[in-house]
Length: 240
Ligand SMILES: [Fe+2]
Image 1 (cartoon, helix red, strand yellow):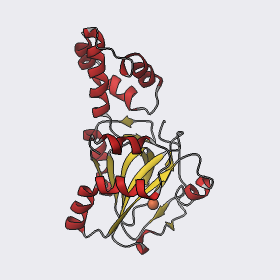
Image 2: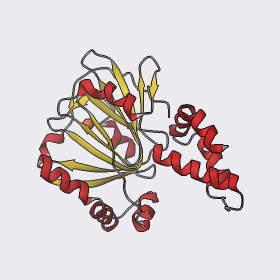
Image 3: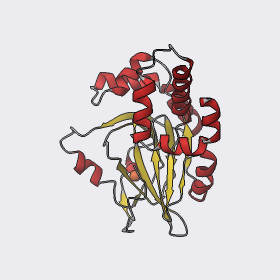
Image 4: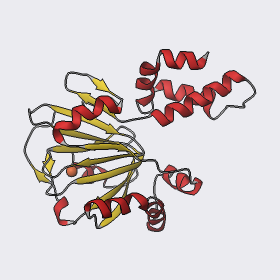
């Protein structure tokens, strides 16, 4: 029954599920996620449904007219004029790494542990595009100067190098100005990789949870200074 329900209403269910911390998701998880005792086929089916939905989780793209897309097949054409890459990159099932990713703050050793666990992706970027270094940025509400840090990037800016990010926990909103002047925002979710090409007008801010862990990849450190363009950001397009 639940499989039929999911198949019939898949788009609507995934749209609700993809909204971070939605009441729908929290309710479903509370009833059938952590409390699943596998005593009844109904609960087992719903546990599988929640797992399926977690795997189906994808970025949310919102246009200025309110149109929202959550499927990669719909999102990709909208980003194509900007040559932005958005891909799903799994972090794997290592319980130690999963536990670190669930923490708010990480010390330097823990950051390096996470980075090394994900270095297969860095090696690919080194070989394919000459990337030189990577680090892990960890932002959460208890960082005293969080607003100051974020204020550097919530205005429209460009970089001389690509901005390459792999969100491994939490989420962040990237906004873009397209060649026709229209703007859009993408809420990038955990286990998603985004490559914003050099000289693309963009901005970045956090969702209401104000938490993100992201691997940053660099070809050089000098190219990543923000160059402000003065374009007015029509922010808040993303519903979070
Ligand atoms: Fe940027």
